[in-house]
Length: 381
Image 1 (cartoon, helix red, strand yellow):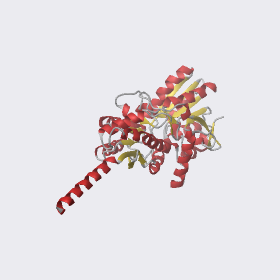
Image 2 (cartoon, helix red, strand yellow):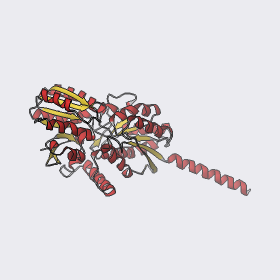
Image 3 (cartoon, helix red, strand yellow):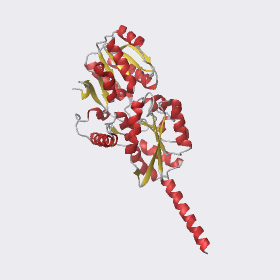
Image 4 (cartoon, one colour):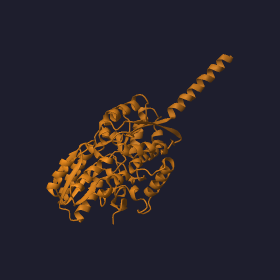
């Protein structure tokens, strides 16, 4: 009799443990905290300890992996999180090329992917594969339209482009081609380079020969610096624009005087002290304060993209829990649907309103015009 009671107790305990294990929500994170794009990946990895640890009454566990800025390693990490860790969603990777490369794995496994990358190619044009991806940065056209509007107001008639030879630079070239045509601005030269290049003298000389009124550099992280410093060294005196890929303090330090006067459209996080009060400003201010307290320095805006991914998941998880339990295909599908239904959710970068056609969800509240003045970011007058 005693043995029977003991066995019964053990079985009940095992059942309770299984229920508890099923209730745990597992989120994978893939960042490039080492390698060529570490300036992007480090603040993203460092933001993971600040993400919500529970939602809908259930615990959230994060499993963080580094891909070393290598797309192949990113794919391996992504598949490991899906196949071995059985995660319910994945935040990452950091790199645009790596993110495009893992789209198929997210779709095949039915795992929501929150991509903190620059290129809109991960969500546009929308396809059956891309419906599993949600992007926590502003789409290129939102940023580009603000830049082209400024060019038009400034009387720019001709522009030169130089960008990375990857999905980030390629999509920017496409978007700028469309917007400049509509604005009556001619692209007189378009060049590309590899992120790992140590010299782009040839491309820069071709831009100089075309003599454009302005140049746009479309490159993420530290790769955004060399095109501008090279152009300045060769005597280019026109206006240089950058994308939100350059929105990090090391851009200022690495570029020095060569980046003075740069104009870009980017997140309000760069100029928090200068923008008007809003829900997004409150969240960004809190995030920056918590990050600084934990790491001893303020985060780059790229860290905010991972933080926002955590906010999006925290907002969507309770709804998904109404349908299914974590660790199941049904829960992942419900989580995808709940993410797509996100409305008026403020984050560090702006306000999210997702739709079946728009998995970035930002509007004009997700950008401000910024310049570099006296070696610092300033709101453009």
